[in-house]
Image (tube, rainbow, N blue to C red):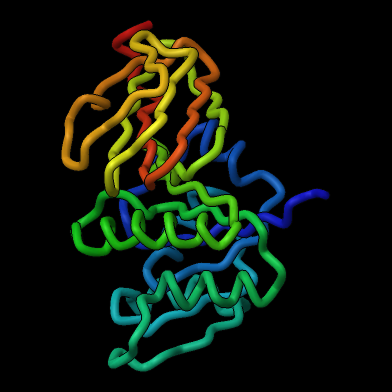
Amino acid sequence: MRQLAFAILMGGALTPTDRLRAHLAGARVIAADGGMRHAQALGLKPELWVGDFDSTPDALIAEWPDVIREPYPPAKNETDGEIAVAAALERGATRLIFAGALGGERSDHAFMHLLYAAKLAEDGFDVLLTSGEEEAWPLLPGSRDIDLPKGSLFSILGLDTLTGLSIAGARYPLDDFHLPFGSSRTISNVAEGTVRFTLSSGRALILARPQDLPGA
């Protein structure tokens, strides 16, 4: 069954690239507060704009008078990104692309986005986080293939102890590896093309730099 993809425009750093635009192709779009500033550079018009708008200048609001806005009070229990995701899920999203979710001024927000992505993946959703320069995917028990340019850097960050970790299609392959929590053993690998990740137990994040090709 074809996935229904939603792009969530978030307030972190974003570099428009051809690869980023390919990820976003065909996706419906919801902006979360200041993430709206990325819409013009990406050539996108969100169908909805949510948040408390504390990081949105009046000039940006004036640029998009036709986009439906749903304002929320600053004193709320969810981040603007979570509110945007909830709106996407109400509309039937099965795939979520967080654009502008990595980096930026707020490390707490960027880290929370990564943890939230892992939770969404556990709930059965396909999730990608991207800044254009970097990409991240949750890694849960099972197998998944990630198509990366040959020579690009990637790392695996374990959110707890990982067992049965295998990596194929990389300069430094692993087979049925036990990765203790907090180990740096899986930092700075190099893709040879499509990389297959297999995991028996645990939760992790794959972080890649598709534009960074020191190993090419």
